[in-house]
Image 1 (cartoon, rainbow, N blue to C red):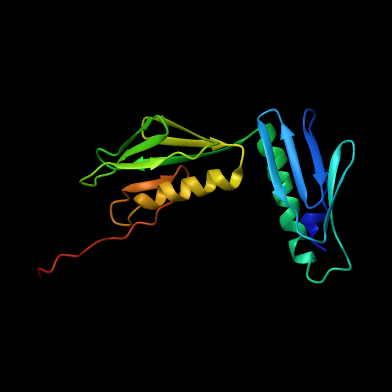
Image 2: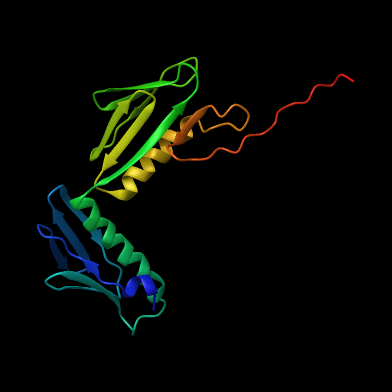
Length: 179
C-alpha cells in the first residue's frame, strides 16, 4: 500500500464531498470539482477527513492508491484556496496583455501571439509577470506549460518565458577564432 495513500485528507469547514457510483464531487467556497473514480478505489467521508482505500480483490489497483489520494487532496485544496503559478517574461520588449478571453503576447516574433484563456482560469499581468490562477491544479499547470512553450528560455542570453523561480543554465557561447 502507498504511504501517501494511507494518509487521511483533512476536510476544512465549508467543503462538501459527495461520492456517487464511480464519481467524487467536491464543493467549496471557490467552486465545484468532479473526478471519476477507477473501479477498485473506495472513498470514505468522515466528519473531519476523507480516506481513500484500494479494493484488495482488484489486481494492480494499489498502483493508483496514492494517485487518487493526491487528486482528491488537490480538489479539496483547489476549492478552498485555489492554485496560482507565476511566469516571468525575460527579454527586451517582451510583454503581455489580457484582452477579454485572449492573452496577447509580444515575444520578439514578427507577429503578435494570442492564446485563448480557458474557462475557469484567471490570468493577470503585472509588469513582466503573468499570474495564472484557478481551482483545478491540472488546468493551471497545463495552461502555464502551453504559455511557456510559446518561447521557452534559451541558454545563451536567458530570454524567453520561464516560471518565476526557474533556474536557466547558461552556456558560454562561441569563442573567438583569432589567435
